[in-house]
Length: 56
Ligand SMILES: [Zn+2]
Image (cartoon, rainbow, N blue to C red; front, side):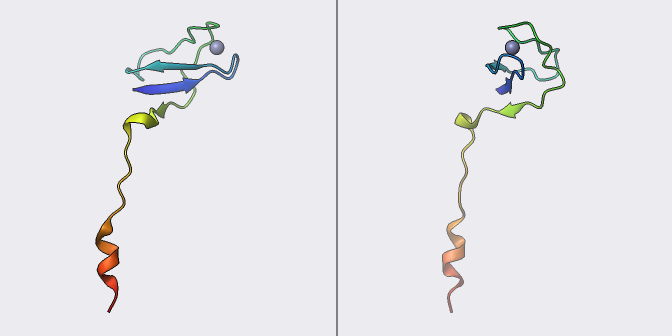
């Protein structure tokens, strides 16, 4: 899932297909050249715990 922030109306729109032409559903602005961001809710960052064993 990707999201784009419309520079015109400042609203966020979501799509799963980033390669298709992206039109803002709120104001109709063309968002195809706006950088998409991955929906952070589904991205989990795991910190490696192996670093703790580095002590002599
Ligand atoms: Zn818009």
